[in-house]
Image: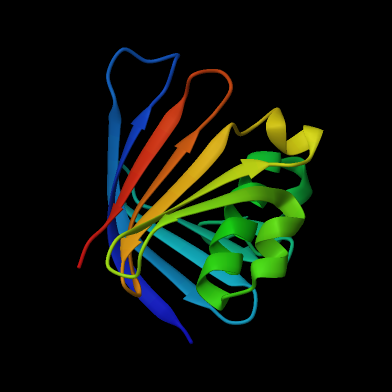
Length: 149
């Protein structure tokens, strides 16, 4: 299943006084591609294919392994969108609450390398619809991404 959704994201960075807002689209393409097309505050395309990250029109990607936070988010997205519980539990401790109408899944990293980049990812939704993704980093940075209907 390939799926494309619109998002609005608010990033709170410890190094900045004001939050940074972004919007654009997210697209997951089976089996291993996640594309974030950001329309604002600046136009950019981030593509993760397998274990490589490509920015804008780059032909050569960099290994995702250089960015533990990206690995965690990608494996969380892939595990959730593909329904691969084993992938989720490989990298994360999971906690699911709620019911089919309204649910919340909290992911906490298992590995020390991921813990240095990420405290948690909280994913919530309604039925089969993904509604919100909140990430928190150890340095106080956070991201609140709302998936638009």
